[in-house]
Image (cartoon, rainbow over all chains, first blue to last red; front, top):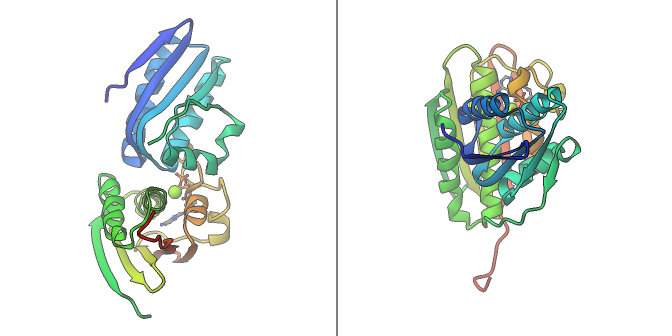
Length: 107
Length: 146
Ligand SMILES: Nc1ncnc2c1ncn2[C@@H]1O[C@H](COP(=O)(O)OP(=O)(O)OP(=O)(O)O)[C@@H](O)[C@H]1O
Ligand SMILES: [Mg+2]
């Protein structure tokens, strides 16, 4: 899997896309993890604009990114979340550990 | 119980079938004329139930997953997801938010999501014999004007 990413001033933005379920999450996790290791950012931005579906497997992806970024004393921001993944993230109470930026997005 | 339509799906517990299962149930649900949010709630809940069969019930093997859907009176979709896997010892504990036996890749939110996204959730299980997840979702009837 190839995920588009963008680095500026130690702020790494990774554009997630497609359906994030148990089947695809492992690969998303691997790719995001590799990018963190490569760029060692202060801030990781996970952009959900092109995520068409997400279940609880996606929550684990965000949590593991948070864990990895904490080791680097960095932070995670989640942005441009469409309604369906947004509802799953809200149910998990993830706002308590990551910053969810409004970034309006209607699916 | 009286029902108006039904369908049954049977497939092996391969993760590639997760997307297929939730899409198939969503297609069946379409006859109730749900809006996008209702349809997404159903897809999400089915994805949780099916994923649990794959990652927990048949942790180290491939087994059979059965989905039965029925249309009940009052615009209600009835979904049963059944496995013949390891079963659950303590269902109340399993349904607690953030409880998981799945390690790093799981968040323990599956049952919580099924419960909050559906109208009702009922779980029965026999250790060593398997688990049945029974969910219902009432779809709002909308006038033809909106
Ligand atoms: N079909 C099943 N067979 C056996 N055990 C199950 C089954 N479904 C759930 N469980 C047990 O219940 C626990 C809670 O399930 P739940 O779906 O809420 O969380 P999870 O699957 O661990 O994590 P997540 O769904 O967030 O990825 C699981 O960790 C597992 O121990
Ligand atoms: Mg689960």
